[in-house]
Length: 210
Image: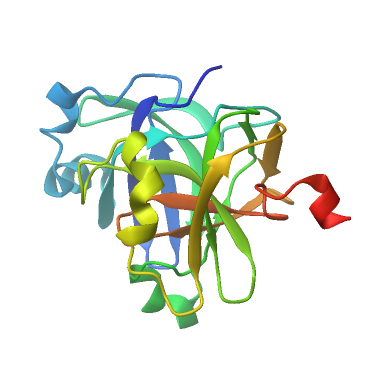
């Protein structure tokens, strides 16, 4: 399944402040503007009965595909006219509730996914002050009218925390990033682009890791 450049959106729902169900249009539709533009938080809450709703999108994938992946719940749920399925669960510890609202804070998402990145394609990385690497899985157009072509310039526009760096380049070999033990560690930058933690810097060759 070719995914790079595909448009999608998410609706995040919760009845308690430490666990959030993530619904995604993946594989069902491309988050049609004529439907998404009419969706409101108030309508979603009223229709679903959830006390919390967050609209996350539109977004565009920068992964090339996935494998060994399963949905949390394959049943199709129509929310405000938009067909979606539950793809993950975001758990937030009480101690992290205030931090969770800010960019560059790690989130733990329960999901069974393995993202695939093709050789020769561009990838975009954040490396934190501890050297942990996060690779972009999707970009948002909610805060800024970004395109994939504009992502290479993020290093000059992001408000990175002290010690963090942004880097981009072309992959030398195909790479994949798995949600280890069905748990993905993700961060968002200040433009709401989403990155998943990787086992190493994908832009370094295998020789660099030896």
